[in-house]
Image 1: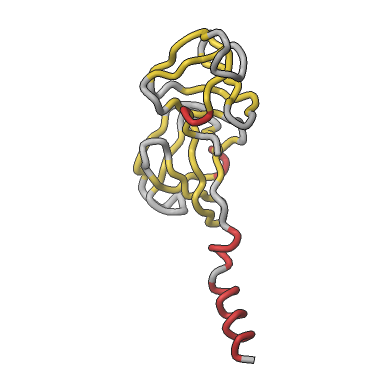
Image 2: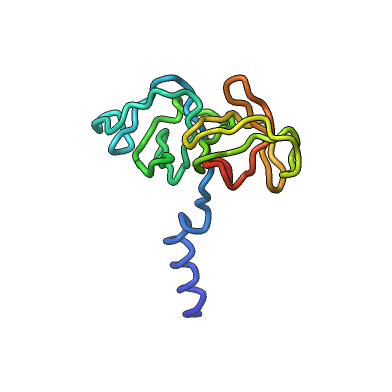
Length: 147
């Protein structure tokens, strides 16, 4: 009987741990405010000015999401400012865009670190991206914004 009570107490006090899963979203608009807390009453920490910037959702509180960006800034943002559009930031100094999803494919371009890429699909090791006038495949490990 004691084990059941302990399990019930553990389950209801740790449901956040059991059901919280981090996932990526992107910024819906060219401007968005990152706040210190989950309400419009909290002051703005950062003004984002890049549409489709990927953010990692860490927690929820009503209509606000606690997020982390590629520079490890954390804070709260309203759900109306977020989108399910897939995008990523290049994290390596030089990222090669390939014509196909294998490293022996024809290289099309080299991207610098911090380049924003829109993602159309991914396989096990590569993601098909578009950035500027370039389209092709990039190694998944070179991107931040895709789990």
